[in-house]
Image (cartoon, rainbow, N blue to C red; front, side):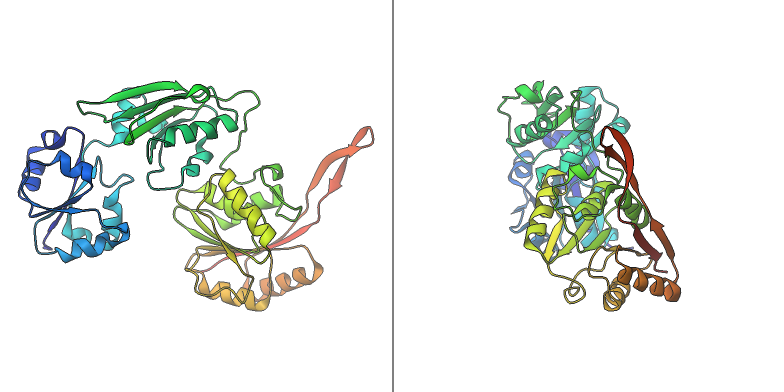
Length: 400
């Protein structure tokens, strides 16, 4: 049996007194304790060598491995495997060498304070992450529990709410939960003026005005949700495109010819932790994509100055690829080679030349070939008529 030399212990505001007896004994027997200043203060009674979180934080794994062979304890807040350091460590060190000791998480404590059932709540973190990531969760009636990144985060989230027509949302911030100095602050997004401690958890009940922005995370946002120059994958085609791309948790999309970023942004909104790299040669369109990513809550969209096929190098292997521009035999060959097993490829064409290439690729490689024709009702003088968008030929296939 592998020696479990590393213990990752969740600790709360009640410190050692809140730990189960066996977990407390593990901490008290440690030779090395690694954690933040707050964690060391909560366990100050234990005599062990103390190590602070390394800087940069990515050096943590090397720090841990340098102490292998000793009794090592990492202290984390609450449940180490729920938006915490335990998951990162478990991906880098053999899980059979690790013992996890969970404590009640901030989500569980906050839900209990609010009287909310956790299955009915969306749990989010912006701790050490871009705060704009909460934006896709702002929807009528949603209840959110958010691990914040500091004292300023609640006000920033309240601004997001107000800007989208949710100023009446009920907001609660709870600090130092389950400790002797626990504090609670209540208000609404539009009148939020509290100064709160840096270490806090935020609860939001989203309440929408009649004119509030309502955007689904199911692909097919209206074109008006994006700043664009007219050249973009239109709403109806985009919804079909994303359905074929199949967004999945933590999956990576290459969006070739990303334009204003509409496909990549909807991909990231549609699945937890989904990632995307947008390749775009025009600076003005890269600027549009970056602005749209921030506004629509996908600030981690990576945008690269480049074009296919020349710049499809040194990129992490994708789970899906969308070719909205730069279609060629060479582009297809490169992305097909790079795609992971079960990877999805979707290519859209509007010109006769590109359509001819897709027909040829379909004949040689299979997959699905469809023509998408969309008509939208628009004014025709005092009446209404159908106006056709340019037809789109779409080829899609999965790598087996």
